[in-house]
Amino acid sequence: PLVLGIETSCDETGIGIVRGDTLLANTIASSMEEHARYGGVVPEVAARAHLEALTPTLRTAVADAGIELADIDAVAVTSGPGLSGALMVGVGAAKALAVSLGKPIYAVNHLVGHVGADLLDAHGGPGHPVELPTIALLVSGGHTSLLLVRDLVSDVELLGETIDDAAGEAFDKVARVLGLPYPGGPQIDRVAAGGDPRAIRFPRGLTKPKDLDAHRYDFSFSGLKTAVARWVEQRQDAGEPVPVADVAASFREAVVDVLLTKALAACRDYDVPRLLLGGGVVANARIREVAVERTEAAGVALRIPALSLCTDNGAMIAALAAQLIRAGHEPSTLGFSADSTLPVTEIQVTR
Ligand code: ATP
Ligand code: MG
Ligand code: FE
Image (cartoon, rainbow, N blue to C red):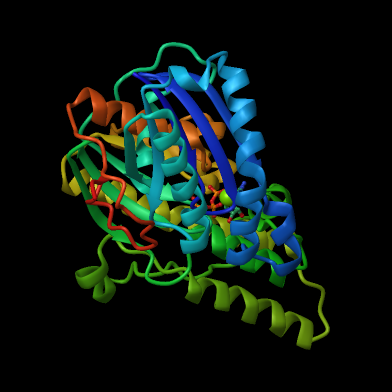
C-alpha cells in the first residue's frame, strides 16, 4: 500500500511516504535551533513549529515521492508517546487529511515506529522484513527503552526504560556543564574523540547487584550527570583546569557501557541473537564502535538503520502502518486522541 506518515512527537516535523517497505520520501523539518537557547526542547515552541512546518513539509514530501496526494491508500500518524501539544498538531493534521481524501487512518506508536524504521532502505531501494524476534534499544533525547519485539504488528514487550533522564538528555545536560552548546550529543562526541575514556571512572547507573533485582533492564542517568557536574565543580573550586576531553570521553564511555551491557544481557537472557539500535543517540561514534565489538563477541547480529531513519521521521511511521495494513488490521476510528504516555504494547491506537 501507498502510505503517508506524519510524525510530530518531539521537535521533528516528519512526513514520510512509502510503498509497502519501499521508501519514496522522507522529509524532515526540525525546530532544534529554536530550542537551543533553552538547552532543551520547549513543548510550546515545538508545537507551534509543527503547525508552521507541516504544510510545506507535506508538499515537499509529495513532490519528492513523485505522487499525487489523491493516490495514497492510507494516512499514518504518531499518536504517542511524546509531547502532548506536539502530538496533537500531527494528529489533527492527519485526521483532516484522511477525511478530506476519504482515506483510512492508522494511529501508531512512536517507539514501535523506530523499530519499523529497519524495514526501509534509506536510499529508496527495496526494503526487507525486520528479522524477529529482536531486542531493540531505542535511545534519544526523549526516551531510553529496551524492547523485546516478537512481532512488529502484534507483540512488543517493554523490558526496561529510564527511570529519570533519557540518554540524549544526559548528553545535553553534561554538555551544558562543560560549556558546550545544544544539542550536546554531537558536541560531546566531537570533544571526546581527543580524550581518554578511562581517565575518570564515572558511575554506571542501576548496574549494582542490589539494583538489578528490580531494575535489570532499566536505566538511570541522573546520578551520572550529577557525578560529572560535581567532578567538574571540584576542579573549578580548586582553581584547576577542567580536562574537558577526558571528562567527555569518560562520560560517553559510562553511558555507552551501561546501554550495551543491558541490551546484551537482554539478548542473552531471552536467547535472542539480534540487536536493533534506534534513536538520535545512535549517531554517537562510540556507541556504534562498542556495539559492533560486543555483538560480535556475543554472536549477536547487529542492525543499525541509516541515521536519517534512526532519528525521528515520518517514513518509519508510514512503514509500520503499511505492515499493519498487510497484516489485515482495521484502520483507527477518527475518535482517537494524542496520548503522551502511550505504552509500547499499544502498537496501534484503534479508537
Ligand atoms: P524522541 O525522544 O521523541 O525520539 P528527540 O528529538 O529527543 O525525540 P532525536 O532527535 O532522535 O530525539 O535525538 C536527539 C538527541 O540525540 C539529543 O539529545 C542529542 O543530544 C542526541 N544526540 C545526537 N547526536 C548524538 C551523538 N553523536 N552522541 C550522543 N547523543 C547524540
Ligand atoms: Mg529530535
Ligand atoms: Fe523518537
